[in-house]
Image 1: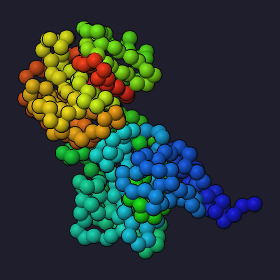
Image 2 (image 1 turned 30 degrees about the vertical axis):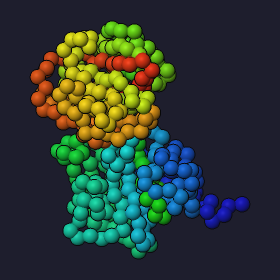
Image 3 (image 1 turned 180 degrees about the horizontal axis):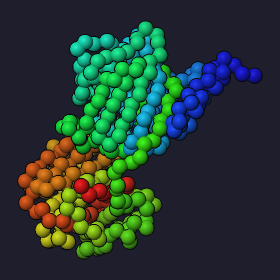
Image 4 (image 1 turned 90 degrees about the vertical axis):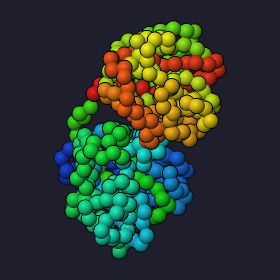
Amino acid sequence: MFTRRHLLALAATPLLAQDEPGFLPLFDGRTLEGWEIKEGPESAFAVEDGAILVTEAANSPTWLATRKTYENFDLRLEFFVKGWIDSGIYLRAPEHGPAIDCGLCIKIFHKEENPPKPESMGSVFPHVAPRLVNVKSKGEWNSMRILLEGSRLQVWTNGAMVQDLNLSEHPDLRYRLTSGRIGLQSLSYPIRFRNLRVKELPGAIAWQSLYSEPADFQKNWFVEEGKAKWLPLGSIFRTDYNGHLATKAKYKDFVLETYVRARKHSNGGIFFRSEGSGQKPHYEIQIHDVEGAVYPTGSLYGIQRAKYPRLVPEQWFLFQLFVKGPHCVIRINGENVVDYPKLDRLEAGHVLLQAHQSASWIEYKHLRIREI
């Protein structure tokens, strides 16, 4: 027998997606299949009357993430606002690390504010105010459309454009991830979401995987020196003891991304524009989670100390390196920890992984690079 709840669920997302060519449902109206709860309990999100409900069981930083990653896409959804509501839509959010800093967050807030603020409804939170606030807050469903192609972000709420932004021109947004999860933010307010559907658009960025599976070890790397242990463990690459592993190719201007997990007080690093061994000219970025160290994690060794990133030992963090001419930016979990404009080694060189101490293991996954 079908109950009212079953009938409401059957009337949800899939029908809308079928009416819009190229769109696929993100939510089936009945379960959270295709989603996973990040940084919170299983009770943080539930399905009720054909909608995803944020419960009171969790608060920030809990969020609901698609299992699939997206680069360019057209996302459409509805959300219900009654009374005080605070939430957000995450875009290009990371597998590990703070979604709000590594990816993008479109704010959902009940208050009608004029003039709009960087934290208003429809903002790219908390950096860019919307053009206008367009929200129905008296117990009504609102529509949202998000079109994200490359560095161009456009957002509409209830049919009105509230954002048209070139991310590459914004100092706080230009280094955000270029692909990632779509997510729903929990701040424990009982907001509901329905009719979530997405149309993927062609990708524009070509990455080279340096390590995602054991076959990449022989394909992309050679042992430059030392007696370190280099262990391909499925999708994870583990280093220990003492030595250097170098890419076979050389890179001059590039973006490098990876997730890193390290033992407490680990000691190692990532080199770039290297002529080869650790004894030859190179630039070195420390992986050394000791707050009082002269050069802690993220530091450009011997040149600039990093703003210390407060990392939890043996938990994954997002590492990003941007190198262009004399300029490099090092980001840890979405925060610029080094911004250095005076590199004097401008020639292409190898990327090296450094193992520097026995029983001081470091692990990497989703290690990739793209030339710019």
